[in-house]
Amino acid sequence: MRIATGAAGVALMGVGVFLLLRGGQARDVALWLAGAVVLHDLLLAPLVLAAGLLLARLPGRGPLRGALVTAGCLTLIALPVLFAPGTPHNPSVLPLDYPRNWLLSLAAVALATAAVALARRLRGTAGVRRLRTAGRGARRGARNPTSRAGRASSSPRRWGRRGR
Amino acid sequence: MRIRPPITLRPPRLTGRLHDARTATAVGRLLGAAIAVCFVTGVISHYLQRPPDWLAGSLPSRPYWGYRLNQGLHVASGIAAVPLLLAKLWTVYPRLFVRPALRSLGHALERLSVGVLVAAALFQLTTGLLNTAQWYPWPFSFVPVHFAVAWLLAGALVLHVAVKYPKIRAHWSRRSPGTLELPATDGPDRRSLLTGVVAAVGAVTLTTVGQSLTPLGRLDLLAPRHPDHGPQHLPVNRTAAAARVSVPALAGWRLTVTGPRPYALTLDELAALPQHTVTLPIACVEGWSKSARWTGVRVQDLVELAGAPPGTALRVVSLERRGAYRVMEMGGGYTDDPLTLLALRLGGEILTLDHGYPARIIAPNRPGVWQTKWVGRIEVL
Image (tube, rainbow over the protein chains, first blue to last red):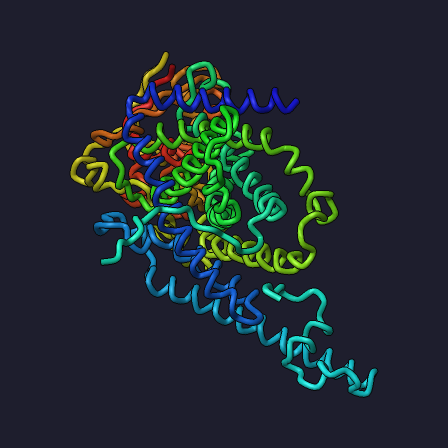
């Protein structure tokens, strides 16, 4: 079964290669294919990994990481509409104020992230109150509502953190 | 004098978490699903747009929203794949520097196929996205190349799934044996990462999908089209200026119909024929679409007037001087559908020049480029 699936994959790839060779533009396409990998592997991926390294040292980095991933992807998919060269003669192509909209979308990401962070903090505090009333503040970690221990004990399904 | 050791290039040592098979499986299956939807809808669109002769006569005109859904899904799944692809590549990035680089012939072939997979995936998403913004920075023609590389990508993906099948199975769920072997402390962090990636998928989808899913038009911030922007509140792909059609050139316009009983009609005579109103979408291959109310003469009636039997295929010729879509052929399935009109009005108003004045075709379940504008001649085939 695996071998048959693999063979089907190779056959489909063969169709692609055949179409490319028949099209007579295979050299240019090969250059662009290789260029895409080089651009990703040598530029984009190292940048993202570097950002991850910086982020790893922060406490409660889950929402922040999600926010950066979201903002980064929004920016990436906005690049064509932000930087398409020339002015379109067709008023229904690229009709929006894209720089403004891009900033709006990033602002929405920032707001949503702040809301998530706030909700986590509130949930953490509420959890600590419950703990206090139940255990009469016997647990050390519960004293400080913002301490990691306090939050960790109150919300098992939180955004994860690493490095501990 | 000290002698410095020669600088040696060493592959980076990546010790971060979550570059593991469970993360790769969890992201990869979402990415695989997005690519599968994108591929299937892309192939359907390709054959609707450029049907081979054996297929052209039997294309169905229903469901009338078929092409709209197809193409909306194609572009939306492609955009949704952007965060997924980047997350997947981030997860497996350390494997780029695996030692030894090549263990065996099989290993070399596997790495080669992964290279093709990565290249084709990045290429397809980039060229597709740029095409929707009508930006063509490459030296090759977009349609045939995007179509060819799609097969390359689909094949490399199927091969990849076959090669990795044992690993995928071992990490399919949280309680799969492979997953349980990974450090349990990574679990919450992995779920947090996946939540972030899914949030990114949601964000890129919500800010673009309004170009075809018009109820979400207000959230359409970053798509190259907006349902409200265009003459008569409907976007246009090819303007009259681009097609070199002008009002003076239309003086004395007549619709010529050839067939067993050929005839010609002025615009007034056409407007005096029984008029019908239908609600049909314009759905562009680039992903945007919008429904509109069209009024005009049924193509059925025009065929009958020419003395041809119902379900006869037609050739429709536009007045535009040049363009890949100047001459359109329409199979019997479309011509016999009562929804297929030679439209004279849009939303109750006379068509603007950009929408194909004096008369245009509007048919169900067809790519926008075949909704021929500025119709000059109809030939019964």
